[in-house]
Amino acid sequence: MDEFIAGLPKCELHLHIEGTLEPELSFELAKRNGLTLPHRTVEEARAAFTFDSLTTFLVGYYEGMNVLLKEPDFYDLAMAYLAKAAAQNVRYAEIFFDPQAHTSRGVPFDVVIRGLRRAVLDAERLHGVRAQLIMCFLRDFSAGYAMATLLESLPYREWIVGVGLDSDERGNPPAKFEKVFARAREEGYLLTMHCDVDQEDSTEHIRQVLQVIGVDRIDHGVNALDDPALVEEIKRRGLGLTVCPVSNGFVTDGSKADAIRRMLDLDLRVTINSDDPAYFRAYVAENLQLVSDELGLSREDLVRLERNAFEIAWLPRAVKDAFLTELDTYARSSR
Ligand code: HPA
Ligand code: ZN
Image 1 (cartoon, protein in one colour):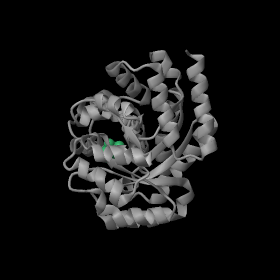
Image 2 (image 1 turned 90 degrees about the vertical axis):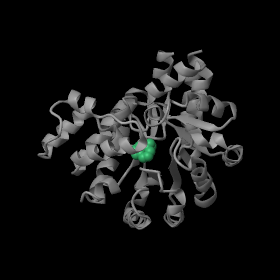
Image 3 (image 1 turned 120 degrees about the vertical axis):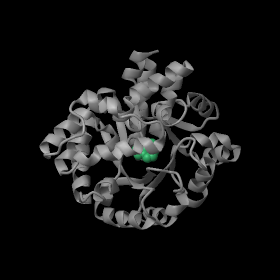
């Protein structure tokens, strides 16, 4: 199954570019920018990074970003991820970025977006992997700051396919950003939001993303299974869910593989993704492997997970179809 997973054409839809910052690159960027890191070696840095909840994870995640200052830093970060993704046969990735995690430190929006955009273009040419960017607002900052960030993004509208919402969900419900997302929709952005797993008010937040925000996709969203009415509505709208098994194991109590099985059985458009692979030490292939091991997935199940992902990807129909044909050809040839 390892070999089948390795060759499987993949589509990654839940990936924070800042969560791909490996300690090796951190040290390189720190040196380049004349900064001193709190740890002396890569091994020390890895060992020191421990967490057991979304809140404690986010502390280290934001601290890690301090080495990202200049346009080439963002370029190198995204190129490193895209090269690794291509090596795992990721054919297409939708990449989250957190502009406010940088503008709040004095790094201009323009620096962030130009570095990432240049990497997206070069990676397609050099590694044959296609990607698009999704701008996330930080939900623990104000709605006003999110709106200002949305307006700041408009000159780069063509480089960004949609907007999302991430960071600490506790006390920061989707409805807080109703106006921001309504405006984003008017500007032609597609909409997604994190509904992290086993949060306080998880099911109420999923209700809000459906009824108040009107999202085009849900990130995580595993707790929808707690309420049959939510499952029904997600199915009715054909919405996809971007589940991140290894990440779940860190921030809650296990991979939620059983929930993924239930979602497949309910015919929900569930997908498997890596979230913050440098911190969780698992890129998308390792996430697929974990679920496959825990559930004893068949090849057909694995193909179905990737088919779901290409189907819900924010791509024109003809491009999706080309990827789906590639996936079908692989499935047939490795029977
Ligand atoms: N949830 C919320 N915020 C995040 C995450 C996540 O999984 N990863 C990076 N920022
Ligand atoms: Zn996430």
